[in-house]
Length: 442
Image (cartoon, rainbow, N blue to C red; front, side, top):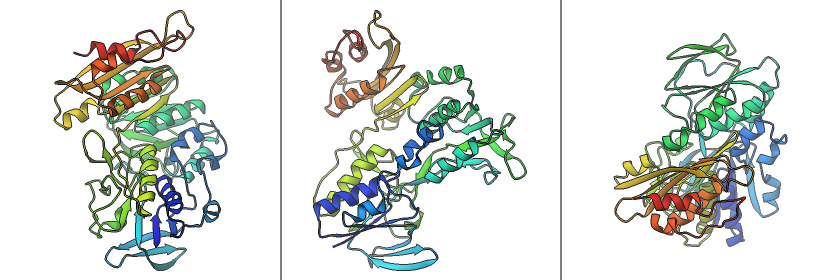
């Protein structure tokens, strides 16, 4: 059996490794368009912020290491056409074209950056942050002593992490977000409102409800024009989201969402026989909504990649579903979420209620006590937990891990209120903030 995997990042390489372990006799070939495999883009903001210096830390394995396992990985090979009827692929490599056959195929082509519709993006000094080369180029640009003012467009996870990285680099930072609050797609306003003061205290100039219209400069950026003003800048980093990298399959008949994400079931199968998909190019099953959704996270890519690897090699496993659990660090703050946000509960037409409270991370007589803020979303009728979000200086992220478990097991707010969380004065209060929120919920 010949298994071909298109894409050599998290999902693709997880699938390749697992498939080879399940079916050692299978011929497995991976085509990767870039020259890097097993690359984790999540590390890029920390790399350009000088938290580590070796870019190779972001690429966990090499083609040679996979070759030792009997997996052929071909870099700089771009699949440009898929013929599902003939089960053939057309591949380009250094100006040459080859056609190859597969018995089973996995598409794991990831996502590409969404660039805003503004003039001047081609100018020098304007970057996105998605690939290894992006990180290398930005780091080189930041080393120029003339580069002092950095403008970030977009305040999602990457935008906020890049803002912190630029602060660490000693730059003057401007952050422009067209929405009315920061990180609007991930957090409700009760939680996200605490991020802006943290960044402003560090000197970040934040512009909400403002959109960039043009990058100004001859060959190199010198300023940006928004719908409100013109601001001088030496460097621009676009962090305006991603979209599935699936244009090459547009004519195949594989079912996709409106944004291009390949629709897969709980086994990772697409709408066409012998073709699976996973990672940022595909949907993922949502545990609560019981439908495919687009949530491009490394955790989901790795889990679905592993599962597809088993299924493509002959097993018949199903993924119970994601909760979209995610987190971010912004200077001294940490924030996390799991399950449905209030906006998502509204969109799903769920009859829900919410509770939002503040408390402390641990007892007042231990050093380092600080505020914590939590929001719960739960069903109005039976009080079953739907989602939770938390932010604070410490202790927020791993508490949300506990919420993810509670939601997965169908816990109610009453059960959360009496849940037996660990207590010691340096770590928590006798009634943890999650207990308090569960007991306050009506």
